[in-house]
Each structure stands twice: as structure tokens, then as C-alpha cells.
Image (tube, rainbow, N blue to C red):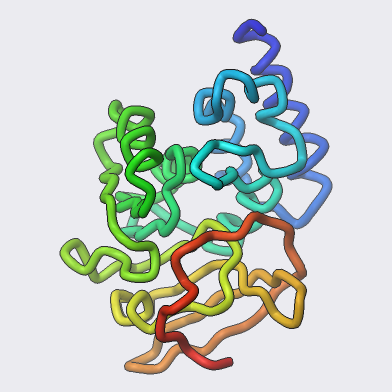
Length: 217
């Protein structure tokens, strides 16, 4: 499939999946229209790179559907002043989009195979750093961060990540709540974080949080 066809598929994704929902930030839409998602999936899956479901990328993992990624980043309201910690780099797709929106991003991936792939895919972006580390541990060495984004559904937000937020920072992700995945954002004030839920959202599960010490909602 040629570059032109992928470009058309990308435009169709923006029109049919993003603009028809609550992904309203024009910067997010532009960034997702700019990044070639087909380059972040296995060759055999390139023809379904823009479908409205997760795409398997190996090691038992999948990329979030474009709409789930769009909603996550729409809620984050990133600017060039933001220093972002991304949890779950996978093959680097979401980090490549964040690189268009924020000042810098540290992308953590606990799968050695996927971390290596992300480093290769993001090699030409000078404001992205990929680190191999446990998802729930984050990456303290480069903190604190003004925004932490968890790219996948988890059971709870770990305290270890919240502690890496800068004052007034925010933590964005999808939490499984009574069997339903809900988009959530937490705002840090002092040592406390107040959370609010948004609409139900789709997405893929992100491993690594099973034993993490977490906040209770």
C-alpha cells in the first residue's frame, strides 16, 4: 500500500473517528493527522493501522485505537511548556504525537523488545527520550513532570507516579471502574491529588500495575 493511500486513511480517521466525537483540540487533531501511524505497527498490520480498534504490536500488547489516544491527549491539554512522562511507550506512536504538542517527553516502556522498537521509531525526534523501566515506577531521574500520561487502561494510578508530578501537575489515564474503562484526570495541589472522571472510553489494558501501591478513589 502506497504512501498516498495511508495519507487518505489518516485523513479518514480524523474525519470519521476524531471530529465526530469529543476530540476538539485542533492541535491534537493536527498532530494525529501528521504522524504516520502505519510506521508504528507490524508490516502485516499496516492496512488496519487506522481502524477504530487496537492493533496488536507483539509481546502481548496492542496500540490503543486512535479515538482512545485522541481522547487521552485532548483531556491532557498539552502545551510547549509541558514536560511529559508517558507510561507505556509501546512502539512510540503516542510519544511521537506528544512530541508535536509538548516541550519534551520521557517515554517509559517495560518490554525490552518494544522499548528498542520505540527508540528506533523515535530516533529522529530530539525532544523524546525512551527509557526501559517498569510502567508503575515511572522515571524519577528526569522528574518532576508537569503532565504524566498513562497510555492504556489500568486498575488504579500508582502513588509512585503521582509523586513524580510537579506542583499543579496533572495525571491522565483510563481507569477500570466496575468493569467500565473511564478517562480520568488528577490535578496535584500540594501533596494531594483531586480526580475527576470523564466519559467512558475504549482502550487496551496496560500491564505492570497489578502490584503497584495505588491511590484509592
